[in-house]
Image 1 (spheres, rainbow, N blue to C red):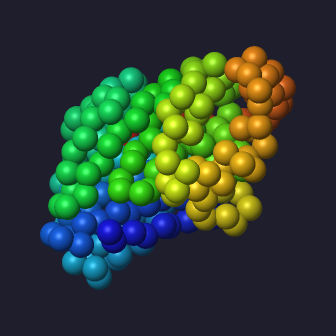
Image 2 (image 1 turned 45 degrees about the horizontal axis):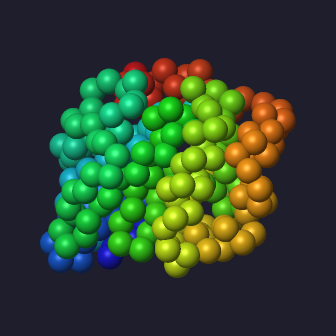
Image 3 (image 1 turned 30 degrees about the vertical axis):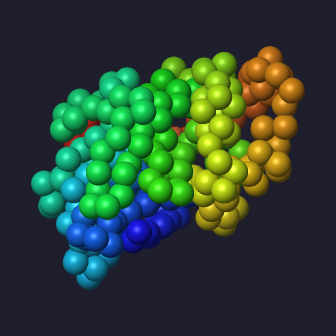
Amino acid sequence: MIFKQFFDKESSTYTYLVGSESNRDALIIDSVLENVKEYINFIRSNNLNLLYVLDTHIHADHISGMSTLNEHFDCEMLMGKETLAEGLSRKLGHNEEFHLGDLTVRTLFTPGHTSDSYCFLIADKLFTGDTLLIGDTGRTDFQNGNSISAYNSLFNILLKLPDTTIVCPGHDYNGQCRSTIGEEKKSNPRLQVNSQKEYVYIMKNLNLSNPKKMDVSISRNLKLGKE
Ligand SMILES: [Fe+2]
């Protein structure tokens, strides 16, 4: 697998490029508009064919690079079918599979952080968006977030994957770049709860401020980053 993790300093977003060694087909998950040039340079210098751009959900803290990448490479723009974003090439459902050379991409509908959140599993790597972060989980207090759904997505879907599954989060604010399901089960403070009720209580009392670019990000991302 060709694998590259990009980091956006302003929003602490991780963007991932995954490619197949067999035919150089590639996809990008959670691109950031301001960093599109960096992705293009990587794609060109590694002779990759960008077939897909995916967003795990409508982001509230940065503008997606999906439309700009689509203009450059004519790649398909994909999100889950629950999204309110318009202009996608195709919408994905839960537990669908599609191929990228010799790799299989599996979709997991994991609502909670937002009502349109998906995770993507490719071989041993799980791209969790904001559903599961390293030592943390995505907030559930806007964009139709729901802490009961988040609990179900975490405990009944993601934590049921093998402990060795590598967690590739959508953000990190402390310089950590990857983890595993086993590690998160053991040490993620948000996951050390005994019940759904306890999780809901924690999420209800976080009292977080809204992201800086929230309004402009959401309105642009509903158009896949277009102005
Ligand atoms: Fe998010």
